[in-house]
Image: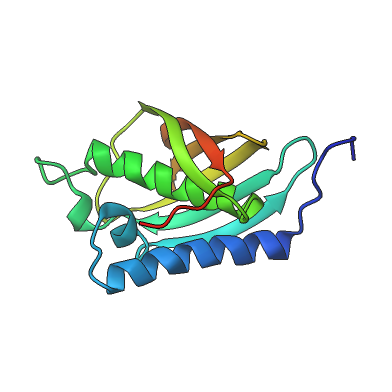
Length: 166
């Protein structure tokens, strides 16, 4: 391990990600119905890997619900896709930095194909770096059946050390 690199424990990372998912699920059950809390019903943690050179990789599985469909009723709304990427990459970064809050600064997506309804997808997040002020991740939404990448995204997240009460 190089100087300054953080050593991560897979079980701790899993626990922190599951805590993030549970928090959003509870918010949905308590009537705070926004897209990311709705997603909490459909997204499950699949795999966590701690890596050398970057914090790690996290995979989620999701079956796209009808509530996320676009105007044409066949594929996922682009805004919902953006929320799915934000939700999963945010959960992954939280797994490697649970003591701080995280706020999206930049979220860029490339749509390679449609994200279809009632189909299972793998959301693969590579947490590239968690620094003192910013975290960086790369996310791929992959069709679980064909293994085709349908969305590629990069996410820059501010690491906020202060806590705020609303």
